[in-house]
Image (tube, rainbow, N blue to C red; front, side):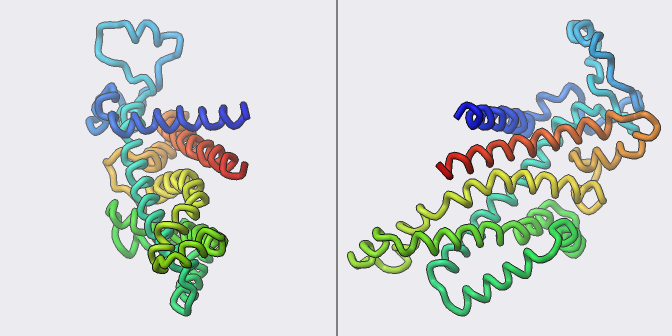
Length: 280
């Protein structure tokens, strides 16, 4: 129990910090993330100097250095949380709604159309996610809407299969037969009796899917198929800073990389804690 609480607490703290950065990012950023300074590839100040810099009355220092274009790394990392989380949440919510709806229909009303739907879902899931996302975005264009649409096409089948499997179990329970004997229509039974009892696996999966969506968003931007510059985005920051690593400029790529890792870890902790709670 204590381990589960620690896992849940860790996830909540990390996700809360990421959410604060996403909502209040421009206000929290010490510098304008879209305005380049004259300090190019300036390294972060030593940690021992931070107390003095914090209480100094001069201009705000570049706490985590600047990149090769002179942008403040900390400011762009904070503001980039909005881009990544908005895309991930939009993709997850839409995938959840589409997948759960189709899963309910496929599980409750079994016919040729729903079996065809399941085979189409199997076909989509047989392709590598990242390569498929790259192809879909390349065909539709690098807009945020197309990136979200590509993720919905890839993640909705996950919710579809989870919901269908649970619906197949729930639809044979006694309370469903009682509702049918009471004269309830099939759609009323499906929406009011089956669906609420078949949502748990999909809800648990949603936390993990948000983490996957953040990784996919960053990966697409890293290879040039995602968010367009100069929009602050974690994967784009890593791509821009990767070339400087061999020159010793590690901070422009490492800082957003840590942000991605921590955020995905936070959502994974939430998902794992919810899964353990669901299995009890």
